[in-house]
Each structure stands twice: as structure tokens, then as C-alpha cells.
Length: 439
Image (cartoon, rainbow, N blue to C red):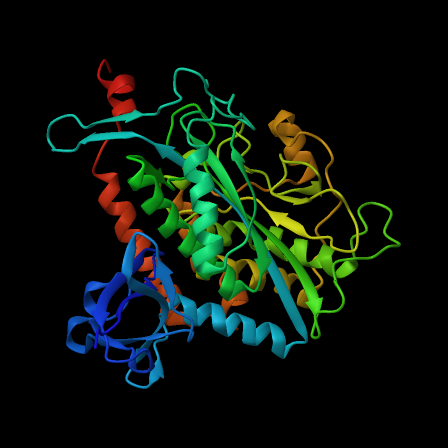
């Protein structure tokens, strides 16, 4: 009898997908012990034994590993759920939302780069360098890649194969895909809206599949928020709608609203996002590199305004408007842990509903063209300028997370990110040499 091999996958607190492959006598007995002290943000060495158990009875075939099945797992400590398991946090979010009479649908647009050359020289104290290459760099200039067709779009075959594998092997529906604005193979996948836990699973699976497909084509899939200087970065735009407990009525929809068919509930939800956006930034834009993307002029939202069909706003109401109306939260990027990011975004919005936070009037102008004086006059807040600043905000504004996030999770996450910042602060960038060598 051939014992099945199963790749057991889970996500650490930072958002990195991890896995172990084991053989089992039966798919009914799948579980695995692992060393939690070697996983970012999990446990210390003196209490390091954690257990993986499949989250579902469905095991996916892996096309590039024909004798191996894949299972996304829950993390346990003994027979109890492990409190720092990001998937558990998203599961608790769904339970909380239902307990107050709601359901939530979330969809996502994930942006990324597919390049065919990465050469990194990183040997301090010698000057560090990186060389990136793309099979389309001669044909698509900076900020000129949006909706480019083949053959100018040189990586469409990788996207097509990824969609096919996601649909046939992982039951994930991609709504659309296309070349994005930036050069060097920037693309986007839109994943069909579903529940927060399932969408977070799907985001992690998309990254896993795209990286493997790109490798088979001698390319590399990169989800860094800001990869190319002076070109657009990669976002992870979250689309949300709130529904009644039976999933029969979209609570964001109001046919009598003259501006955008948007209900008062939806406006309060937007108010919560604006109120908590600066602390939320530490979770949805969670890397030092994230804040190189969040600068004016590159379609990255910096200013905390809302509007319909306006991509200079942090929150927009996509067109066309109607009974399936939703809002789009644009600051997140694909370096975020999707389980934590989706949970935090929903909690911020619900806090707005609970406290009836007024989002103010929509701003139907290009916010990037406003002067500093005009922004102050309009009372427009901006996102943090760095991860350090975002973490400062999270330390003082986190009560809205408490229905789901424990103090332990929040403090552990902040500690991990502070260490990450301190580590990177020791290394000057290549651009700094150019600026400061002559000082």
C-alpha cells in the first residue's frame, strides 16, 4: 500500500507561508508536530511543540508534485487552538461578525511582478547592489504597462497557467487578470469575493501557485510593495460589503441615496476605516518597503478621503453602482498577512458602525493635486510615512481590534516588526550613497 504524501501548510504571524511534507497511513489521520520556536511570532523554545491539523477534509492535488496532496492547516497547542495562529484570528472574526448579526463578503485585487532575473549582492561592508531583469523591459516603459496585450505583455502565459491551476486544482475562481501599470511584468489577479477566512486561504494559495508556475518558466514572482524605483508599486486592494445574517440583503445598499446608492451603515463603516487607518497601516502595510509605495503620484493612496470611482482616495466606491455595491480599501499591499489584514479592516469598519463615525463628505477631486494648505483646510489626514510611525499609532489605537485580537497577539506582532525595522536600519540604501557620498 502506498501511503499518501501531504504537504501541510500554515501561515506565521508575519504572513509567510510555511509547510512540511509527510506520509500518512490514511487521510483520516493527518496531523504533524512541529517546532513552534523556529516560526516567527509563535512560541519560545521551552514550550515549542505545536500541532498541525487540516482545516478541511478536502486535499488538493499539486500539479508540479504529482504524488503529493496539499492541505491548509490549523495550528493547535495540545487539543486547543493556538492563539497566535493567524487563521484562528480570521476564524474568530467571522464568529464575531455573525454574533452581532452580520455577514461580510471580501474580494481582493492582488498585484505583483514577474521578472526573469534577480542578482543580489549583499556582503557588508562592501556596497550592496541588485540587478533586476525582465523579458519586456525593452518594450514597456515605466508607468506605461496598463492593459498591455501580448506580445508586449511577455508574461501572460504565466498568468494563464496560474488561473488554470487555481481553478482546476484548488477551486479558486479568478475574476480577471491583466498587465498592470508598472513595467517589468507587473500584473494583477482579482479573486472572487467570499468569506474572510476563505479569501485569506485563497490569497496564500495564489502566491504559492504563482511562485511555482513562474519558477517553471524560469521567472520569479515578487510581491514586494515597491520593487522598481520611480514606477508604480504593488497593492492588495480589499473590496468589502456587509450583509444580513441570512446573506440576502446587502447592508451597504440604499437605493434612495443620491450620491452612490450608499447606506448610512456603509458610511459609518467608511468612517471607521478613516478613523483607524493610521494604526491599521501597521497591519495592512506592514513592511519598511511598504512606505516606499505609499507616496503621491503612483496611484498609491496616501490621503484618507473617500469617493466614488476615484483612485486618488484611500477608500472608493467602485462603479457601476447598484444592489451589489461595495467599498474598496486601497492602502493594503501584498506583503500583509491576509488573515490579520482582512480581520483588522473589518473590525475597523464595524467600530465605525458601532460608534456611528461620520466619514465626512466625499471628495470627488484628484487629491494629489491639492496643496498642503488646502488639505489642512479640508482636515484631510494622511497615512503614516513609515512603519515605525504606523506601529506607534497601533500601540495607542488598538481597542477596535480587541473583539478578536488578544493583547498578546498585538504586542507580539509589534515586537516582531520593531526588530525588523531595527535590523534594516543598519543598512544604507544604494540611493543614499548617490545622495550623500559628496557631503
